[in-house]
Amino acid sequence: MKIRDIFQDKIITFSNILTVLRIIAAPFLGYYIYKEYQTRNSAYLKYEIVLVALIVMSDFLDGFLARMMNQVTKLGQFLDPVADKFAGLIALTFLVLFKGFPLWVYLLALIREVLAVIAGIILYSKMNIEVKPNIFGKLCAVSLAVSGTVYILSLDYAWLGISLKQFSLLLVVLFYILGGILYVKTYVRYYLEQKA
Image (cartoon, rainbow, N blue to C red; front, side, top):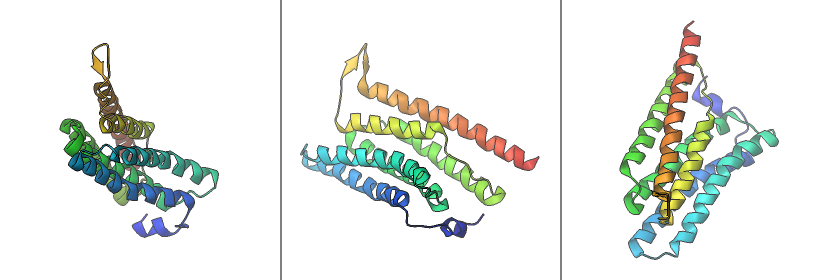
């Protein structure tokens, strides 16, 4: 399948619009995180939280509505994971720069996303295999949203010696590692099946 095949279906659907809005919202989230840091004005927090909520809701609604309204398109299937990766990495970049989010967690997420994209492109272009997202991809998105919100709001609550920030990071790392393992198993299985 070629890239042009992605545009053979209907392009403008409600679900695809939600996905594009998620891509557009991510830089605004980064901007408000930066403005809050620069001005020390906590009034920007409400915009940050609203944008995180919109990004997360659009992530869950776009696929659900596409299936419900019978509007599943190749473009939507391509754009959805791209929007997830773009929004997640943009948000994490600004959280690292201005909210104290750990660089090593950011690098873990970045490396995993880059490797997943490269493997997906190779399988798609060389072997015509379209790899579907797995459950851990969605759990990564949720855990990133939770952790991002904890860092945006600077929530430092602790229970049994574990802070909310540490717990949220643990979930992010756990889901990224489990998702990475599942991606490797899936990619290897697809590759071996195609070679057989």
